[in-house]
Image (cartoon, one colour):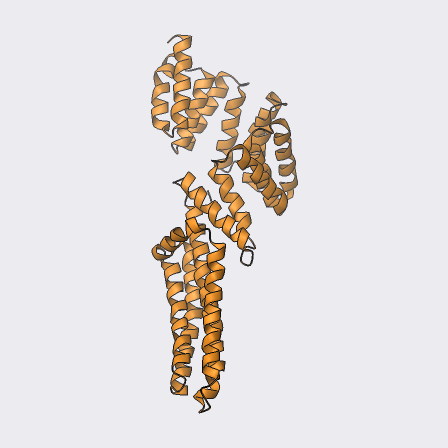
Length: 361
């Protein structure tokens, strides 16, 4: 195979890898590697093919073969470091990443590789070092979205939410289509968003966009389920507040007192409570995503169950006001059933939802 043909094979394999077709990329490299088994560049691409195909052992063997052919081929050290980190061989992974820095001291690639290796090891005592490494990567490659994403990850681990948010936002300005960055930024927005409508809306939008950009990702759809469940749970607490209003407001009428003005006032208070809760949730949910959240709620057992429990309590609230002369013991027993059904359902549905959480990758 001529040098031009060899280069074409490697370029075509790169293109197939970028298109998510690692097996075909490896097949394109096979004839070339049969003739030139010591081509470090081709062997490194083969390592990426095996990695993307899920064969980490085969990928590591290809990376080692590339380094055997050319110990100074930095890209082979990059892929080796990443593979060793995924195989939980932290010390070897760090050595490989530092070798990239030794070979390319003024290139951002080595620092980014080392940063990801240190993040993967997650040594609490070295989180500040990870952050400094990430900043160095940005200093050397400010135009690289992945470097800003690394700063965001490192700052997030340190608990520096403002810095993490700024870094993720810079990364998205450079690469608006990056699903991982959108997801991580949405996690920050999700934190403390319960009483902050704009953050809640941004979190929902971010998770929805991340899910649309990466169809294989399960974490973003899961977090959308969590947010839908939080709406159902909020409905439950609103209904529970309504239960208290209904019981207190109709207590006099149930004991034989006058119906006016207690019952109409209680009914108005319930209507105001329900309307306020509905408007609050409508205002903080982006219009284009309301149908999506409703679809997720219907498809999710934990969300659906939580919603049913909230509706049960709301029905009791209405019945308590509509039937102010009903037997006090009967209404008290029904209220107890509604209350405990809500509390138990909330606990069980939350546990069921947590069991659906995707494993960290």
